[in-house]
Amino acid sequence: MAGAVAAALTLFGMGYNASVSVGAGMACGAAGAVVEAFSNHGLDNLTVQLATTALAWALLG
Image (cartoon, rainbow, N blue to C red; front, side, top):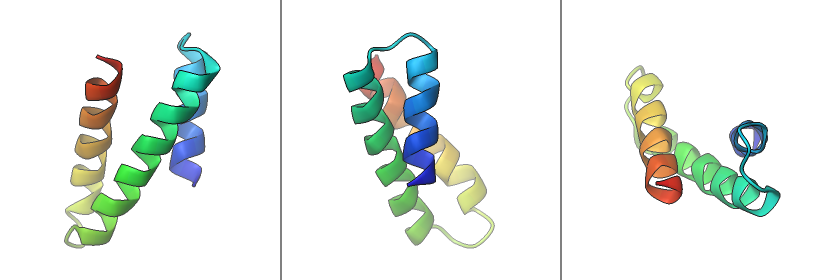
C-alpha cells in the first residue's frame, strides 16, 4: 500500500493527471508486492526496483 501511494504521489508531482497517477501507482505497488513475495532474501532489494521501474516505463511509455 505504501509503495502504491508513493508511486502515485510521485507521478502526480511529475505532472501526470490524477487518474493516470493513481492507476499506474496502484499497478506498480501491486507488482512490487508480488515480486518481493517471490524474490530470494537479499535479492528483493534489486528485483523490486527493476520490476516496478519496468512496469512504470511500459505503462507510461
